Length: 111
Length: 114
Image 1: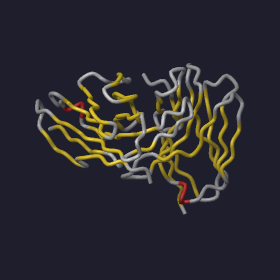
Image 2: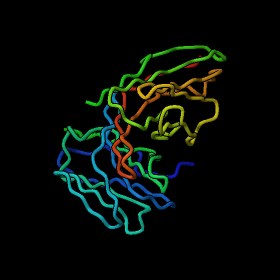
Image 3: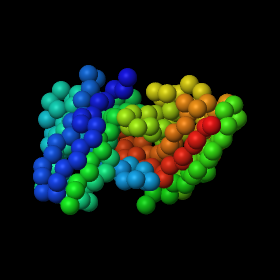
Image 4: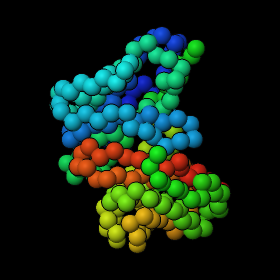
């Protein structure tokens, strides 16, 4: 059983639609990161959130860290084909340098 | 791009044979990690290192060992490979900024155990 569960596991939407990906846990994390991975490559960091309730925006992407620091969400507005990829959340616990990854959400945006 | 090189990138081996994967970095980062990626599981931490000769276990360390004799190299060894170890293995490095350190990943090593 993994510490972080993501939903949905797969998501296929039309260009221009909005979507939300969820990352949930029963554990508290000191920080939460979101990565995007494209086929054949390693994940690349999108954002880090560290404060409960924190909201960060990166162009059309909005990230939120839950008040209790147990969950996070990623919202994409007006999705584009370039957003296609595997989205992974990762949490750091009190030790600070171990990052536990979520189960992943595979997003396909259809032109 | 962070200087991380994994080798080999692809390997096919038979059950029971030893396998070593190598991760080489040119960033002089203190922390190095080995993850495996399987469908439906995201990335799972196998082992990590916080300095030369300093290593610790992750979530799925059974059947794996690691060594770090130099800052730039982190080796992952499967002493006797099993089919359940068929996976894509990723090495990652971090400067170790507590809680917020960014992980930089290599391109992955695809291992198939027949």
